Image (tube, rainbow, N blue to C red; front, side, top):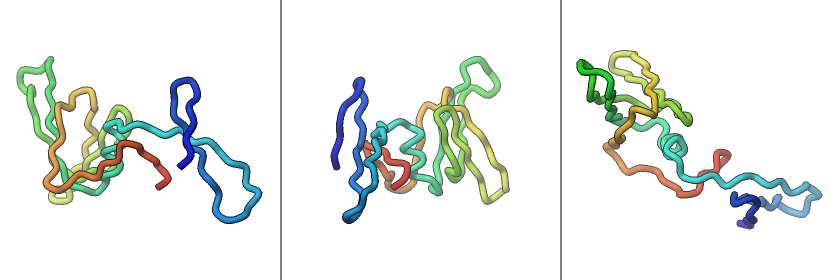
Length: 112
């Protein structure tokens, strides 16, 4: 793969297949942020451990479900056993447990 640096950011310069006249496009090579790791593991069952420091009643909680989506500030889980869907905020995440190997790539390419 062909990379170049611009303003401290790595960019991937893909090579079009075959002998074509496509103009090469530069795509940013994203880093391994939590939401990207979760996207690579979409469909897997997880346990999300969260702490809510301002609550005495709901201080430490564990949420179990299937990763449906993730974004920079949230995770969406579904629980097929009871049909409940939950959107959890990343700000409260302590850690996430998997029962199977985690798909991980230090460089995330959303189109692959």
